[in-house]
Length: 199
Image (cartoon, rainbow, N blue to C red; front, side, top):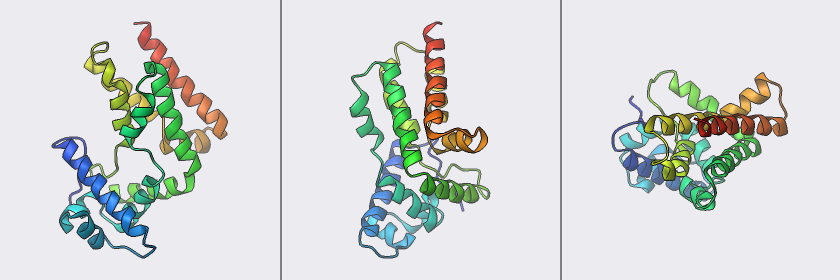
C-alpha cells in the first residue's frame, strides 16, 4: 500500500488532510473508547483509502494523536517567536521540540519504533513534519538575506538538531543527561548560525 509523501505535490493540502485526521482521532479518543481507522476516516470526512495512506495502522495514528495533544502547532509556535531575532527564534524552537521530546520520551520512542517498523516496507515518508514546518516559518523572513540553498541547509540542519532522534542519540549513544543534551544541541545550532554570519 502506498503512503503519502509530504515532500512533494500539493503539500498544503496534504498537511491539512493530515491535521484533519489527527483532529478527528483526538476527538474520538476524548470519548475514552477504542478507535479504528475506519471511525477516524468517517469523523475526518476522508475516504478509508486516504486514511490508510497517511496512517497505515492504528498504532501510528493513536500514538501521533496522543503526542499531538501536547504540541503547539507550527503556526502557534511561530506566533511566539516572530518578533525575535533569527538566532533566538531558532534556538527557542529547538528548545521547544527538545523539551517536548524529553517530557514525553517514552511515547516518542514508541511512536518512532512503530514508524520505523512501518517504513521498512515502504520508501515513502509516513511521519509528520512539524519541525520542518516550524523551521520554514521561522526562516520565512530571511528569504531576502539568505540564498535558497542556505535556507534549505539551515532548515534541514536545524531540524536534525531537535526532537526525539537527536535526544536519543545524545542520551543512548553519547550518554548525555537531558541538561547536557540541550546544551550540546544548542551549541551545535549556534555554531552553524555563527558560521553563516561570518560568510
